[in-house]
Image 1 (tube, rainbow, N blue to C red):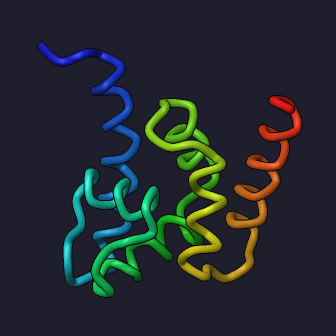
Image 2 (image 1 turned 135 degrees about the vertical axis):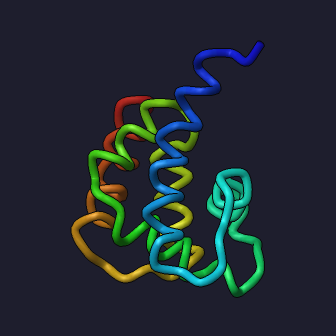
Image 3 (image 1 turned 90 degrees about the vertical axis):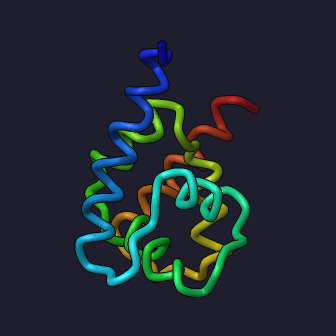
Length: 106
């Protein structure tokens, strides 16, 4: 039987995946998306998916993903730099949240 936390973590990511994949011809899965975000390494064809995640998803959904433990603000802020995302409300918010998190742990 799966851990309920694991299921909860996946549900927010799966919502994000559905939104991202709706606009892209190639379909990415949750494990690959998380790996690309964490490592900054994946095939060029997944770049639009990464950009869509970091630039276009609703902030509340990204917040839910972080609160679920699937990713951290620090990982997302680093991914913004690695993937050379455009500045916008979502990327600015992620950076602010990562900086706030680092301030509270210092």
